[in-house]
Every structure is written in structure tokens, then in C-alpha cells.
Image (tube, rainbow, N blue to C red):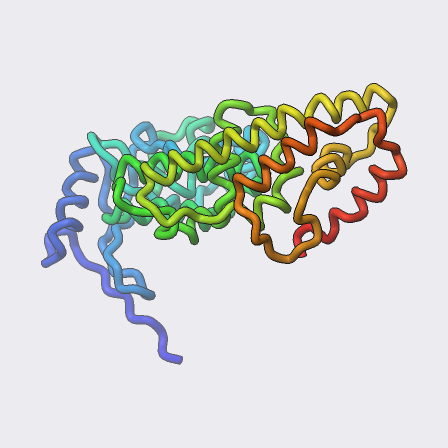
Length: 305
């Protein structure tokens, strides 16, 4: 297979207007354009540049920093005496640049006292949302992922209110991340993992403009939180009886889950959680035995079949 022929252009070459404008902005913002080129896969224009570190920020809709990951990156940079992994950036406004995949590297350099950072600067702002969904710089837990998705969702609302959840289904990955994200925004200690097997089957993407879809999402989140508010006292009551099974909450959810091992669900989201709430309100925690909880926990392996 023949090697790709890269084309590198000086800043004053015949370039698309948005690329020339971006190159000028980078220079005016205190950065330095190193080269302008077409990447080898889609032949899209990109700029390799040195940016002022103080002007590079994380996208406001991505996950929070991990202090341990930043520290590890600092140690690696200090050990090799080099920064060898450029970030990706888009120019947002007023000389500020967003990086959807380099926040930990940015922070590590900042902590090390650097004033500049190498970056691949992309003219297309929407690329930030696509790159964020593919970011593997730090592993997610459920709360981090849900918060990242709802922040992305809100960012898209500001960008274009006509798009729908379906348009960004690939970037969001799972519809339930949006619902859980709305809850985690208000209740950081919420334990959502117990509901994931159910949500995977009934919480689908909404084919409507984002403002309209968000209204429905908020109703779904409120209903799920109502169910959780009933479950938590039951779980606490069981713990007070000395029952401390590691999957205690999941087992209680399983007891009132109307779909359990069903591969697909025909019941609507609202109806399912309303049924669960009614069942929970009738449930007497003193009637639940450890043996029953163990049996319920063993069923959980079939929830996501």
C-alpha cells in the first residue's frame, strides 16, 4: 500500500477562508502557527500550533479532573524531560481555546510551570463534541460519564437547539447517561448503578429537538429519583437489621423490577417506574430475608442479557 503524501502549506498559501482566519487568530492570540496541513484520512484542514497555556481551557461539558491522573502525567513528563502528546483544540471565542481531549495534560503542564502547549487546532467547533465521545484519556465511572454527557447536552443546546438526541446518539453512547446526568447534577451521592440494567431497556433516545427532549428527560429523571427516595429507606432498614449484602440496593430493585430477565421491554419508561414505586410503597422491609436477597442478587447476571 503506498504511503500517504502529506501536504504542508505556509500560512500565506491559498487556503480556505476559515483556515486562514483561524491561523491569524492564533498568531494574534499570542500563539505560533507551526504548519497548516490536510490530515491524511478525510483531507480536512488542521493547524499545528503552539498555544499560550493560559488561554487553553477544558470544554465546559466534560468530566472533572482526576488529581491522581494529573500527578501521574507530571511524573512521566518530568521523567522523560519532554511533552510528546499534543492536545486537540478548537478556538471558542475571545482568544480562548477549548480542548476536548487534553485537560489532564493541560493541567499537568500548568502545574509544572509551563506557559505554552502544542496543539492540533481544528477549524470546526463541532469536532469537539465528536472527539469528547471518543476520549479515553481517563476511564469513566458511571457518575463521571453521566455528568460529561449532560454537560455535552447543555453545550449542544447553546450551539443548535434544532438538533435532536438521535443526531448525537453516537456521542452520548447511551440514552440513560442523559437521565442520570440530570440527577447527578443535583445529587452527587446518588447511586445510579442499580438502575442501569433497567434503564438500558426502557430509556431510549428522544427523537425531538433538544429543548423539547430535555423537558421529557427532566420528567424521567424526577420519576427515577422518586423511586430512589422510596428505595433508600428500605435499604437502610435492611442494613439496620445487619443485612449488608454488597448488592443490597440492586437486590431490592430486582425484587420490584417488572421486566427482570426479559431481553426487551414493551412497557414504557414512565409506566415501569410508576409500577416500581407502587410496589416499593407496599413493601414491608421486615419481610425480606437474607436468603431472598441472595437469590435476587443471583438474578442480576441476567438483567442485561
